[in-house]
Image (cartoon, rainbow, N blue to C red):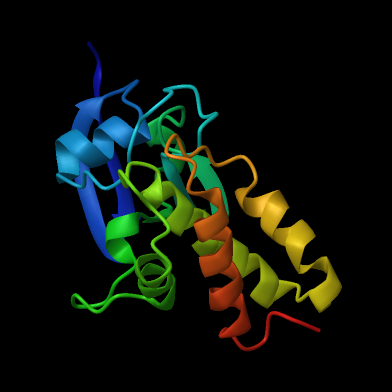
Length: 172
């Protein structure tokens, strides 16, 4: 198997590791960086459990990527944000607190993907705020494809609405 050096920034830290040329980003994060928060469930990018965010060098906004189907080499030189990069020095983010306070998850397997989806939603709304009457549509567009096998959707949505209500600059 051909090995390549993959260099990128993960959660604000530059990393460079030798890895198989065809390794998925999820496997790279797990096996080479010991970052296991990104979950792989369906392995086809459908369930969204493996959602991560990428900021390309020439872009301001975060881009959604499914780590299970994205080759690690495809994010060479870019900035990757995983669920481990959300909290700062152990302090939970507003999103993490809201999910806990609203009992939004049961088994927790989909939670990292939901947290990253919420992060991407907030980033998108800060870039392009929407009127309050379009908030449900924005939530559905960003989180509607996330699959929760424990059917925690109502509590996830309740938490997301709380987060968005507390985030200045996302509504017009």
